[in-house]
Image (cartoon, rainbow, N blue to C red; front, side, top):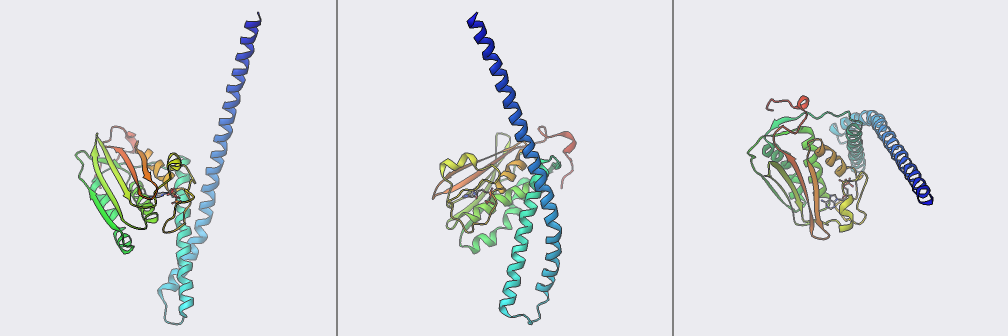
Length: 272
Ligand code: ADP
């Protein structure tokens, strides 16, 4: 009898533990939803006054007639730069909260992925070379058409390249696109500061930043890579990173080719 009583007591404890775990998960999900809503509202509220500040600032910058001292002009430019930076941050937060709230519906168009990736990458060439780094772009044509949301793909490529640029002080940045196993494989490889091994599993978590990575700038929010991951997941793809401290990092994105894996109503079969 004691054995049966113990077993019953054991399963009651188990049921309670499962119930408590479920409650905790729900509470966490609720906090997450509240956080997302909060970011979304805040970003919206910040954007309007920021845009209203940028207009007059840009006008002032464009009509300099020599009436400003060099110091005033430098201050004006710094104000403009920082306002633009804030706008970029706010826009990234907004992108993120839209995805989280499921408000973003990707639209998948058949694209020439090699061409659009080369175009996006080329916008970086001047800055990278100006900083004394080598820049290699090698995007190969794919045998099957890729269906991607162009804006999202652009954000993925720009985020990865701008990280490579931020965290590489010497050497080179290389971006390649190739095909393997019915997937498009995008790689962004740098010879930068690298990432410590124990940080690698957390790289795609929201707000995660590597504390001791020395880069070109310490600006950042830790949301870029988590946004990239969300965007890639909307393409049923995946992202991974390999890195060695002091040697460099390689970020690899894989997205399936074709359209079979995508929701039918979001595929627009019209070439752009
Ligand atoms: P942010 O750059 O705004 O901090 P990200 O999510 O883009 O946010 O990156 C998170 C962190 O990952 C960065 O703070 C940086 O420490 C590290 N990181 C990202 N890309 C690289 C890279 N190419 N080389 C070294 N560290 C990187």
